[in-house]
Length: 342
Image (tube, rainbow, N blue to C red; front, side, top):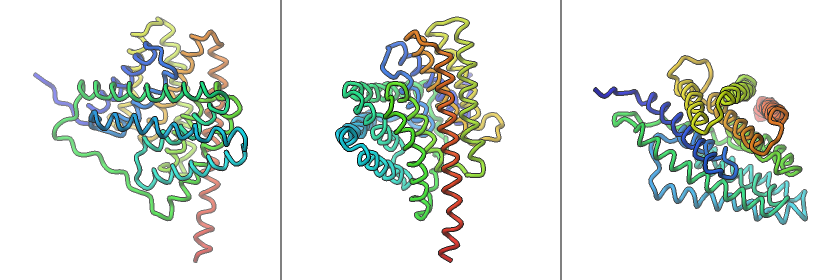
């Protein structure tokens, strides 16, 4: 007899299985930047409860290629007029975040921000590196769409499932302030990546996640939501690495990610009691994938995995603390501005 699961249970199974499948496939195929594809799967499955039609998937891949290609147009300006280039990137980041806060597609916003930061900074260092990053993002997106389709086939949405609630839009007066806050969170990371793109590119994904999460996180709980999820993601990455070290194999990589993904997905969809918001668990999941993926790549390259992890974790915490500081400082100006109008 077939057991009927609740919609939230199906979504948790879908998120865990899709992420694990995409992670194992990405590393098994030795794709460039293999941690990007599972991060995109997490974002797609957490925001969409229906599989992407083929036409929509192709349009999304084309949009990703075009939006990330925007970064290539900024490379000459950043090379020969660095101050003007940085100010132009800041203005474009503000417009991209404002577009998302006004109801625009969050995936398009993510690719726009990645194009403005990762692609342009990589192009300043080496045009070949920029082309590699664009190719990695497009390949990662195509693999992510395929993994989403397979996970929806394995764990389809129940026919009687209620539609996903639409996130409320911010008041028009708040959009500019929140977009500025997200821009100030991402911009210092972009300046850091300009110094050494090859070492700091993964930090951009973390900064983009923080910038988008800051638009929905209450300032009073910012430290717990942002810093807490970063620390938990790092702790889970250490635990995952220790478990994987017992028997290093691609299948074990898949099975361990499935187990960790199931635990995080149960928290994200409220199947087990938690005092944290879904954004907390989503940020934890993304942090885990980025840190773990980079550690695996460091191991394959023969680098000191533990030293690299400590440095990377320190950067993640620094970026997160800076995000909390920006949220606090900008929100301090809100009451005084209102009093001035009165």
